[in-house]
Image (cartoon, rainbow, N blue to C red):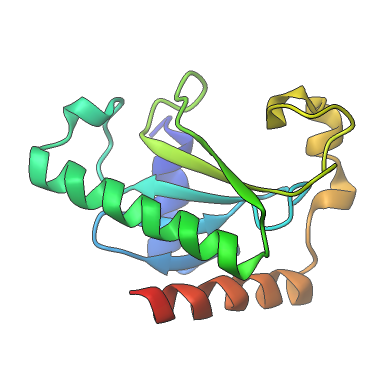
Length: 148
């Protein structure tokens, strides 16, 4: 299995993914490995497909509704002013969403998250220790449980 997202999902199923937040009908909610943007979250599709149009219509509708609910939960849990949504797939061609909580002046120059240099965004100082990670996961779980 070469797919990083499939590997992460397998870790979730084996209770070995420290970033796992919650399983929904169509996907898995996980915090991002790096928390440069506090509350950065991903929603991983349960089906290994590349494009939204590859999903069966009812599954796709539910997937999009759930992703939207996860985004709302991220906004509430992490006091975001705005959410940036990204569904790219050039690096990992397994359908997944990046949900970035944004706040005023969270980047040196206003603009997309990708304007932050990769080395800065993924610096070791932006990785949470177990205790801090557990607190952030619980915040998001609590809001998701309220909304769902």
